[in-house]
Image (cartoon, rainbow, N blue to C red; front, side, top):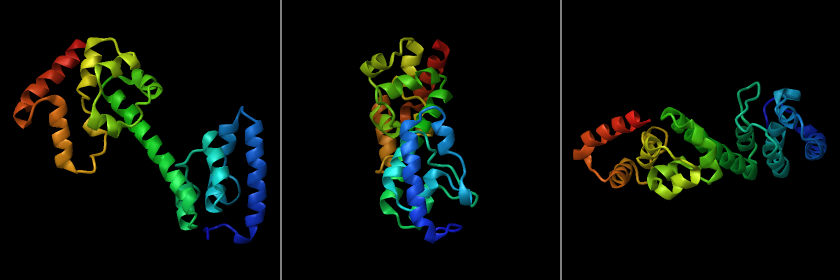
Length: 207
């Protein structure tokens, strides 16, 4: 089922996960460090929960800080172990968590790239954590008010969703749909690319 793991130890693993889950609930300080320690076979607690299909334990470990992308000695993540072991529900859950964290990471990278990383927490607080949605839908003046963006230069960049295409994934419609959405959001087609470049430079100068 899992390379390097003894299938016969399933009952023991189940009992250990139950005890660890109880300990996590009752212990806050240092929980993240505990959950990301490597135990027997080079697995973290989340690796074990994933490999043996313990969804509730996996959810609890993630809630209290377990890393979903951490790799064991063979370079396998908890999700890959769940997939190999045909633990479908656990694999789907971890894939969803990983996708969400990936979107937040790309949002953070985008804001950092345009010099507006200070607004990252504000974006998350207002629920603007899906960079792919922001890329297609854009931001409004009201959105920026809610995030707390005051400076005109910063607002200009965000209203243009400046450089967001470098970090967002293309919509399901493909490249043409992405280009159309970009054109609608900026109010100019391909013939206006020069003016778009000028506005970017003006935005930078206004910071």
